[in-house]
Each structure stands twice: as C-alpha cells, then as structure tokens.
Image (cartoon, rainbow, N blue to C red; front, side, top):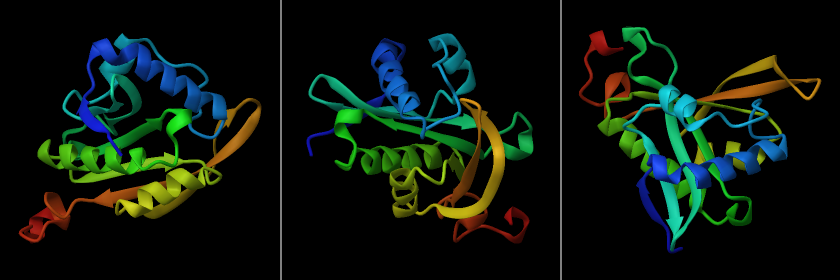
Length: 174
C-alpha cells in the first residue's frame, strides 16, 4: 500500500468534502445530511489532529478529532471522525489513518478517544476494534436520519501513553 499520511490543510477541503459526501450518501456513516462549510468544520475540529491519506496526488481518506466538551476537565477527550473514499474502502487505509490519528492524539495530550457509529457499519466497528477501541455503550434512537430513528454504538480507546491508562499515571490521574 503506497499511502502517505499528511496534515490536512484548507487546500485539501474540496477532496475531504467529496469523501465526506460519499460517506453521507451511504446512510451508514453519519446522521449529517450535508457537509459543513470549511469554516464550520474548521471551528469544530482540533487543529492538531487532522490528517489525510494520499495515494500519489489523490486524497483517499481523512481523519480528524473534535473536542467532546469545552470544559477543562474533558480537555483530553476527543471524538474521532474518519472517512475513506468509496473506491478505496477495505484496503487498509482506514487502519493507517486511525493509527496515525491515535499517535497524533497522544502527542496532543488526548487520553481518551471516542467514536460513535451505527451498528450496521460493521467495517467501521472492526476497524476501531483493531486499533484498541472497545464498546462502552449502546445509544437507542439517538438521532433521526431520513425519518428513521437510528441507534449508535459508542466505542472508546484509552491511551496507554498519557492519562489514567498510562503506566506512570498516579492515583490522582484515575
């Protein structure tokens, strides 16, 4: 697999948006029905944890983190977004991206990653589990999409490098 992982920049937005639209079109990736503007997306995602996967000159996937709360006590908890181009799904790009995002998150001081997905999105569930995420909850009828109430599975990954999961953490960290 000849994939380069790079920082996502504003110049990448058109390709990132196209991949996001492909995910939206599946009806199995998000409750969103349209992508935001770059400015909206930019303001809701952490600047330190935005990456793309590039094959040659083509962007084939992206991943980013959003803070789960503006409260200081949750500064180390973020939500994962990851999307792979429809033509490239199942090729290991998601695992490369999620692995790189985990590394970037720990460098940025994030100790817990969470991800929410539809139970029908088995590929995403397997991807997250392969990168150390575990199921922590099932949310019934959490949102409506196309007139249908949808359930989600909540998964999380605790860092073994930073925070309460790290070997050198203290009781106060737990």
